[in-house]
Image (tube, rainbow, N blue to C red):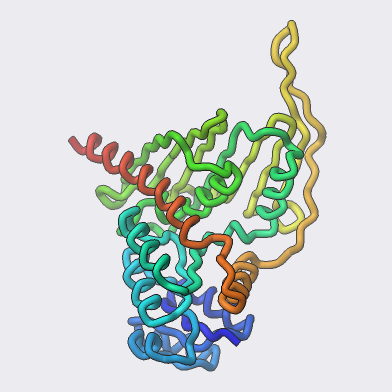
Length: 325
């Protein structure tokens, strides 16, 4: 049985701790905040260990890393150096160079490595991706992703880096390609140099276009992926209840002598298996650790996402510098 140490007892770390405990694989918790670690250790009847002790504990097979983004790469490398399989929350790293250096280390190891792009494991996205793959809505034309809410304002990473890796991962999976163009704009209202709202446009060969919006200053919570094809559309709305998370509609635009005419069927909801995506994600990681299979969101996929994040980051920094000048 695989046993894991969860490193990071913050808000999301506690979700990972609970999920690992429910799956019967939690072996220890680690946090620089001794009180936070002790509280989680007592709640789940596992030891709270210093990082060095967890790294050197041969009974712990893997590490699940849920610490602030700037610490990810260094902690991943430490875990790999100590022979641990690794699951790291998004974003993989703070820069593309950091991600590529980590990828080189992973290539030289025999360790399982997985990036936490949670929504790739969501039943609604899995169903959506299957419909697209079967060609049931025709060739893709447009993808719109929005991740808006109020709160969790960061000071060490912008809203796109914090909120949008999931969306970028989903878009790249659907496009089955890297974007040929990336354009981004953002505004910093709270912390100078850190964009609180970001809009990014990704262009793909063949004409597919994707737009991603991220903000932690929105009074309205929105977590939505809209996928439009030549003959239909799909809407994954994660704010809605399970029976309504994935909507499907047949639709098309016909060119006539009188001009373009849009037509479409009544929207309908797609039946889904209501299971928490985090449970599916961690179960997939554990299965990969046990079978030594490559995770669906392994290091190659992580670097592809990081490459898009970097292109957005460069444009945001340039734009914010221009606004300050």
